Length: 90
Image (cartoon, rainbow, N blue to C red; front, side, top):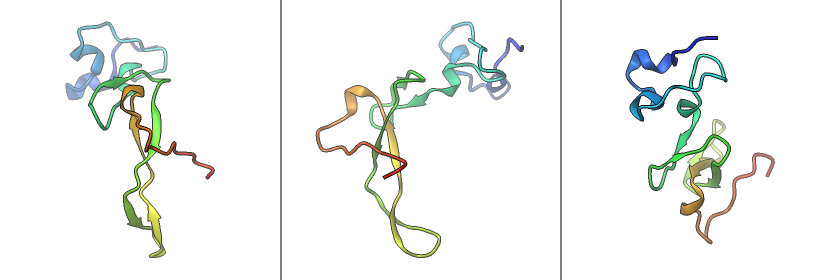
């Protein structure tokens, strides 16, 4: 198992930026680099705490039919009453 995150070579490793030893238990990318940033406040969201809400932005799919663009990842603090949780199987 490697001890250096692959993102270190691009100067974008989150562990290095935070001054922490990288947790390499997932392979060649550290756990913090696998986390999402909240798309509303920018906070780093723990790997298992991301909440996906429908973004509601209109778009067109490959066939030209109207579709929704999908979801955004937000932290618990940024979820509002108006949000609809994203469900892949909806």
